Length: 297
Image 1 (spheres, rainbow, N blue to C red):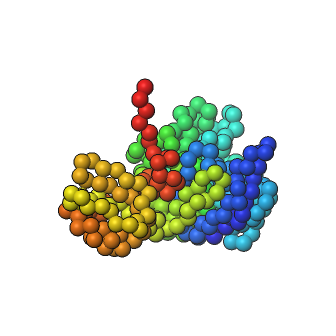
Image 2 (spheres, rainbow, N blue to C red):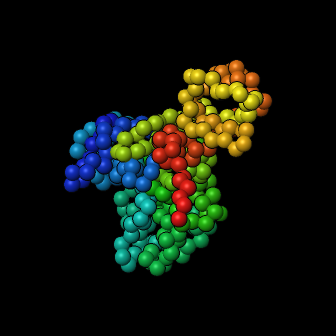
Image 3 (cartoon, rainbow, N blue to C red):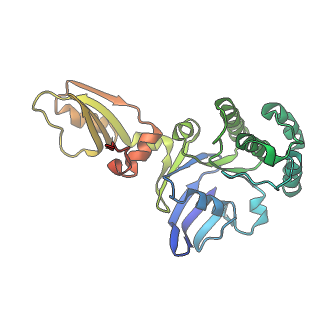
């Protein structure tokens, strides 16, 4: 289990992490989402032991991460900007990581050559960004890490390769109990793979729940009311819009309780619509403040 407790980090007086607390259960796929500048990459660099926090605690199964080689040896990390030595080939980077990680699986690396279809003798710097990311995944999943931390992992990859990589990752989760933390702006993709979600803003985790709990506690209803009828009081409405008589409401609460309250207004039509993770993200973070705005130019 990854535990982060009240972590603070400042850069030249700017508080990038402001008492951040989060928990990533063992064997889970945890999606870390938030707007640009929320602090996602900063906390990832703490989780991988690159940064040392100014205050608070970061641990894996109770052991601190920073300057702890034993813990770091359990973690595989793929940053948004792939690291490689200037003139290194894929093979040379593979040998570099193999010298660090005792768990490196040479046989798996050879088998995955069929998936990634890259020439291991090619220099990393001569590859496209997407091919560099493929090479990074090729090496990372050959490490057999207990924990895999991914920052914008499939950005720049084509749809087929994205699906292939997620298939490999999810197989490791199912078969080996790998813990995965992934930060991405592609919320639609996270919705398909994550079982836990942390919504981050201004250096803090605002909401942290399983995806099922998150979807159960926020509801989208479409309804049409008779002329003169009004919505009942006591609804926790995050967003309201209408097209003619049809109203769309996004609300906190349980579906059964909300529909029971709305029944008192004698709706002509009522239907519950599944919410996407993107909609939950927008309205949990502040409703209208995070909506796409219509601007007249």
